[in-house]
Length: 408
Ligand SMILES: *Cc1c(COP(=O)(O)O)cnc(C)c1O
Image 1 (spheres, rainbow, N blue to C red):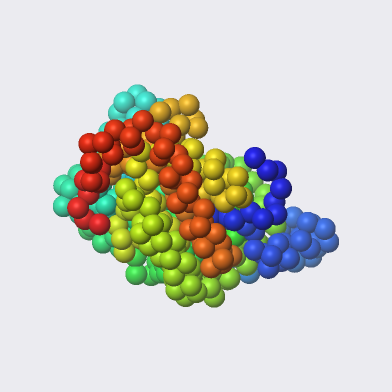
Image 2 (image 1 turned 90 degrees about the vertical axis):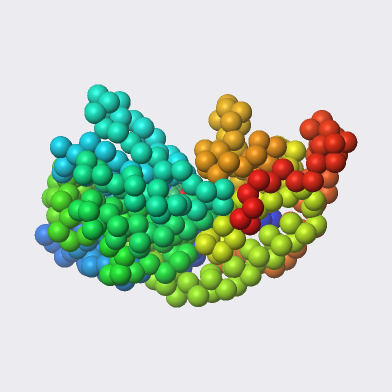
């Protein structure tokens, strides 16, 4: 494995993104020259406060929100925790949470933890998904009860890019007086979001998924939504989140949101074209290969492909030798032999789930990079398959395809 940053072909943007050069440039003076505390009475701090206000406005503009509906947090995970724990405290008599089987661990593990945290008083419904990763709205409707305190459903899935119908789902919760939270960490900056039209009460986002630094997040709380703070301390964020603002990162996030608004159309055309070229090229040139997730209700930058009878980890290690960064849906690296919870929820067959590989692109990827992957990956897969006993057996049995999802 090379430790060099040059010649890296970075296709793991759903894990984290490069800080945009424009973002870094905007931040730098606030480390060196303008280091005041935005809460200070003097003008040295006040000018920083005004820059934070400006950044807050830019973030609000990207979401169709009002600046005073935004709370700065330390990350997407803190935003998720704050929203869900707030709803639990606001409605102590309601003991039910609705979420899905494919949430990010920031929501999934918190909900599972809550169950034991509250002495098994809270019941959690984890909605299943279809084999293409989409949700059945009928099942969702059935899950909502008088006892439901909050629904937490991600806007777009980090592993497959599948987009959920958040506008409809939030409206259905609202009709029943149930709070609705969406983890929009993967959606913000990639697809248009207008919270004037989408009646969510809470929305989480994270800076490092849209070319701002790591360690800055936002929780949107709709005006009028009951709110209980998570971090209690100073009067920052109107007492809704104590702690001196991460000024430089807030300023970077503001710039990143401004850039995202400008580049959204490009992301939805140029980046999508690159993604499609990669996806179609791989599906066409490598046999026994399947797409995981809905073909169109999907983020423009993400493709998740299973190469049957090979291990995702092995694929990643071989790609890494060429400087290609991607990610695997299986969790073997964490010491477990289970495929990812998302692949399992979609019912991806065992022989395919282990070989699921995610490529997530950004505005910085080029056509040459796509062609480089298309040139090298077919040989990597072919070589790995010659070493796979499962592949040999499947070929002997003349298995056509392990895919059981007829939707794609
Ligand atoms: C990355 C991610 C998070 C966590 O964000 P952090 O800022 O890393 O805490 C939460 N949800 C989704 C969908 C993500 O992709």
